[in-house]
Structure formats: structure tokens, C-alpha cells
Amino acid sequence: MTLIAVSIPVDDSADLDAALESARRAARDGADLVEWRVDGLADRLLPRDAELAQRLVRRLIEVAPKPSIVTVRCAHEGGAWRGDDAHRVAFLEAIGTGDPAPRYLDLELASFERSANLRQKVRLAVQHDRQARDLKTSLMLSAHDFDSRPADLLSRYARMVDEPACAVAKLAWRARSLRDDLEAFEILRERRAPTIALCMGEFGLVSRVLARKFGAFLTFARADGGIETAAGQPTVRELVQRWRFRRIGAATKVCGVIGWPIGHSLSPDLHNAGFDALGIDAIHLPMPIEGSWESFKATVGAMIDFEPLSFRGASVTIPHKEHLVRFVRERGGTLCPIAERCGAANTLTVERRDGTTELGAVNTDAPAGVGALLAGMRSIGAGVASPADRAALFGRRVALLGAGGAARALALGMLDAGAEVVVFNRSRERAEDLVREIGAARGGRGASPIRVGGGLDEVGAVGPFDAIVNTTSVGMEGGETQGRSPIAGDFPFAPTMVVMDAVYRPRETPLLRAARRAGAVVVDGTQMFLRQAEAQFELWTGQAPPPGVFAQALDRAERPS
Image 1: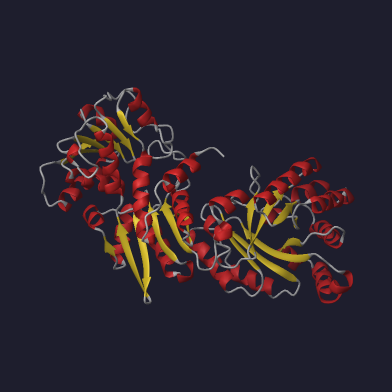
Image 2 (image 1 turned 90 degrees about the horizontal axis):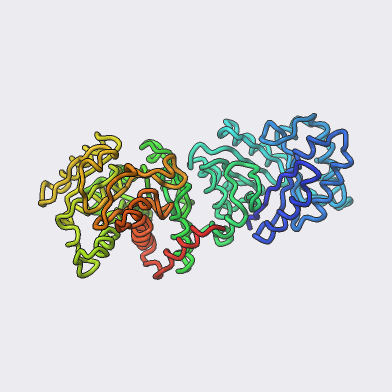
């Protein structure tokens, strides 16, 4: 069983009560161990007030609601200890042999190897004195790199597990991409002793959540409202509740949402709620991949080829929708008709049959987006008889903002429904590429044209429009353009106009707020988001999510905690 350790820093004697309360909350949330990061405290008190430092740490161990790990991390490996190693080693020795004693002492491999005296003492304790003295403290040897993957990573691990005094080996490094997580999993699969292998930073969440799938000794988290002791630590509550840590096992299938950036995405909340509702052993996780084709190809290929991951597919968002189509084509997979025609897809499927892997690229954006827009058109009396009737768009003039994958899908869907589409984009060249490629995909058929209108600041000059559809990320929560609108604030919205935004966080973007004030009908991004996510879920599982489950999950995810 993989444990959860909550890491709590203590820098001053005045921090003790708050630290203990954090530990109690974390235990209620599901933590199994408490790591007391007392390097700040030790750096402040040692060697002048060594006895006081020992009393304070013993107080933490005694009152802690769970067994303790005591760590005095040196500055070279991300901690606050800057003093002489001899003082630190003496302090740890006193803590480890005192009463009460922690379950583990964490010491860096490099520090352990430098101290011949410490090695001798610990080895003697392990080999001769444990039974006689009833020693309760074991040694955790660790190695950290806060910059990148160390070149001697595997050598460090071998030296740890070959050390007789080492009870647990811990490796942690800043991931350069999701591919580093796969190496951590490989280390865990080949482990020769209880092992922790974690990646830090924005690419490392997958290694923390899936530690249980690959049999790690433990994974680290932070207390609710607490400070990270390593970049990328989720809270204990997030790990247990949002990421369903206790339900993950060796057979758990893995899906994700791929994009750059990806921290804003609520796709995991929806799909995980669907897995829970239907009792499916799967997890959906954020999978950040830097925006280049090379990064997408290398990372997705590695995840598919690493069979122990049980990778079954992904939601794919900005800027990788066109990369997905290219990738699946190159790997000999299949494209749905919409993806084939528009050159963009938002869903990767991975099926394994009889030793072979079959890939698919599917576009659920087009039907979801057109369906959401039609719902808005119906609300202003467009005369649609049923949701399947697309006559509401016939002859309508639509301003399409953006020229990425979602724009391609929506342009094709709206043209097929008879709309006239005018494309506006920051880069006119990309807009021209979209128009040319969509025209070629449609074979010149249909009476409804598509053309380039200009830059985003030219929408007002080219109007009027029956509808405006934004597929850019402008206004997205957490993005560089948060709080902005893709078009000018004085744009003449009208009550007979439908304004739809594909951005769903926040639900009311600056664009929709301005349109609503002017009396226009607004369609927020959740309408398209829910429709396309439900279709994705069915592609991966063969089952539709229970009615209302995704909408309820979205409401919960957006509710302030």
C-alpha cells in the first residue's frame, strides 16, 4: 500500500501549534505520515540551542496524529539548513535515538556518504543494536535535484539500495516533461527496496498521483493552505478527493487532458465523476505538453508505448488539436470524418487488441459547438423544430474568432449547416490558411462562403453579424489574457445576436459580460464543453455518462472550497 505523507515546514518555535493543527487536518483528510521539515528551525537554533531544538521536535513527534518523518534538509537540496553538517548529523542522531522517536529520519545520500562517522554508527545500530535497544527509527536516504534530471540518477539509486542502513530510498527531481514521470515509474517497477520516485514541478503531478499504481512506498502532499516543500505538491485533500488516490491500483487505466497551459482545465473533474458513477477503474489527469509538434509527438508516443501506464486516451486542447491529427496519421491510426476534413481533433483514443495498438483521432468539438450555438439561435426564435434541425444557421452570418483547431471544427460544422463564416484572427496568415484548407476540405461545395475578415480588432468594421463565436483563449482564467475580451469593448452587440465563447473558465468572460449588458443572447463555454466531454467519455468507455453527472461535477469544481 502506498502511503501519503504530508510535509509541514517548521521554521520557529512559534510555529508549533499551527503546524500541529495542520497535521491534524491533514490526518483527517487522509495523510498516513507527517514529515516535519525542521531545517528552518534547526538552522535558527543549532548549535547554540541544541537542547531546545530537540525538545521542540520531540514535542512535534509526541503530539503528531500520525507517525513522523523528521527532515533537516540542506540548502544544496532545496532546504533551509546552511550550517555545518556535523551539527545537523548530531541533532538527527539525538532525535532518532531519543524518546519519543520518529518513524523515519530523512537524510540526503550525499550527506550520508560524506559522514564516515554517521555511516558507522547507523550500520552498527542496524546490524547489532536494533533488537536490544528496540530502535524505532529507520533511515530514509534521499536525493533531490530542483533544476533537472541528474545525470547520475540511476547511480544514486543503486548506491541507496546497496546501503545496508537504508530502509527507504527516495529520488525526487524536477521533470523536464511528462517523459520523466515514465522514468520514475520504471524505477518503481524495478525497485529492489521500498522506494519513492517523484517528479517535481508542473510536469510532476502524474508521478505523485500514480505513485500508488506503480507501488511507491509513499507520495508527498502538503497541508490544506500549507506551503509547498517541493514544487507541484497537491494538498492531501486534493490527492484523496479530486485525484481519487485511494482507488488507484495496478490495473487502473489512465486518460488525461493534453494542452499548454493546462492548469485551468476541469476535464478531469468531469471524467473522474463519470468513472466513479459507473464504477470504472480509470483516472483522468492533467498532462501538460509544451506547445511544439516535437514535444507532442515525443511525449504522447512515449506514453502510448509504455504499456504499464495503461494509457487509453486523452482530451486534447490548445495548441495541440492539429498536432493530434498529424500524430495519428503518422502512427497509422484512423481519423473521424470531421477530423479528416478540418485537420484538427480534440480526442485521442488508444485501444489495445491482441497485442496491437489502435489509435484514433476524433473531433467532438464540431457537433458540440454547433449544437450549443443552435440552442442559442433557438432562444431568439429562429424557428428550429428540434435540436437536430440545423436550419437556424442557414444563411446566417457568423464572425468566427480564432484560427486554431476548435475554429477549424466549428467553421466546418457551421458551413455544413449553411452559415456564412467570416474568420478573424490575430495572425492573418493563419486565418488565410484556415479558409484555404476548409475550402479544400469541402471541395468547393455549398452556397455558404468562408472568408477572412481581418484581425480581431476589425470585427466591428466588417459587421453586422447574426452570431459571434470566440475560439481563442482570450479571457481564459489563468492565461496571459485573463480579464480581456477578444474584441473591442465598444462593439455594437444587438438583442438579435448570439454571442458564444468556447472559453469556459470563467463562465462569464469579458466578451459575454459585454454582450449580455447589450441584450444579446449569450452561450457560455460550458455548453460546448459539456457536450464534447460527454462524447469523449463514451468513446473511451463505450458508455454514456449518467445524465447530469458531468454538469453536477462542473458545478462542484467551480464552487469555492
